[in-house]
Image (cartoon, rainbow, N blue to C red):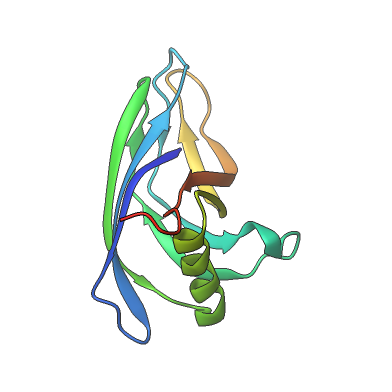
Length: 132
């Protein structure tokens, strides 16, 4: 999964609206389907006992090469200190990383359904200090 763009709007003390455009990449000829699932969002530096700052709902994805997956939702902040640290990373880095972790059901044509742990460190472009 790659983040193509991210917009945060309408901040409140408990939540933000998030608009993500992601891409799911697969080289499988079986066109796997990931059923909709939720992931905890966390900073990589909190591993191994990660501290999630929010939970993101990922819609069902049928992956055929490169599949664009838009995600639009209200993100409830579960750890404000970690969320503030996440935002500091975005605005002070040319590149930053964060983690996504959750359980997902995988379906592939002709194969048994599998329960998997989605555990991914995502690297994305930040905002370079001084750029306009």
